[in-house]
Length: 124
Image 1: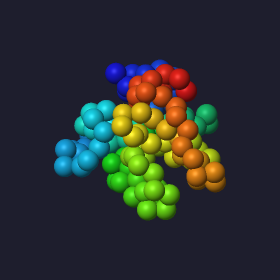
Image 2 (image 1 turned 135 degrees about the vertical axis):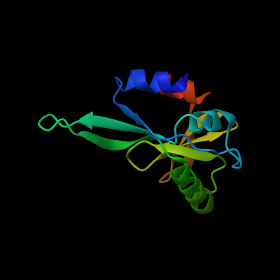
Image 3 (image 1 turned 60 degrees about the horizontal axis):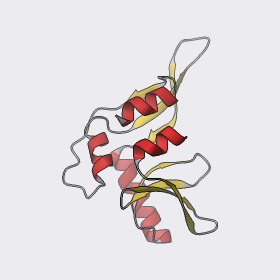
Image 4 (image 1 turned 90 degrees about the vertical axis):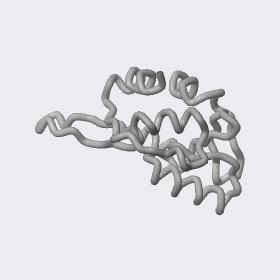
């Protein structure tokens, strides 16, 4: 299961969100299944002095963020896919025909990364 793969990669330092009903949205099957379990996954850390949980970033965007980012990259760059995350440096990751790509807006090119979300997070 992809959540387990992500949790292992981040040493359990993840935060799951409340699941969301996304059946009415045109999303890849793998992403829809994930969002039905959690509306995004965040990378977290614990403050060493206070013990407070701090969100660092999104590992997988929430449905609202997916919709917003996908619309932006389709309109601005014409990508053909669904943006689900970013690399932290301005390049989005997206799913197209079940495959994972990273888009480089500077060079306006897509780079193949993996054959599935699960494989993508196993390779990271």
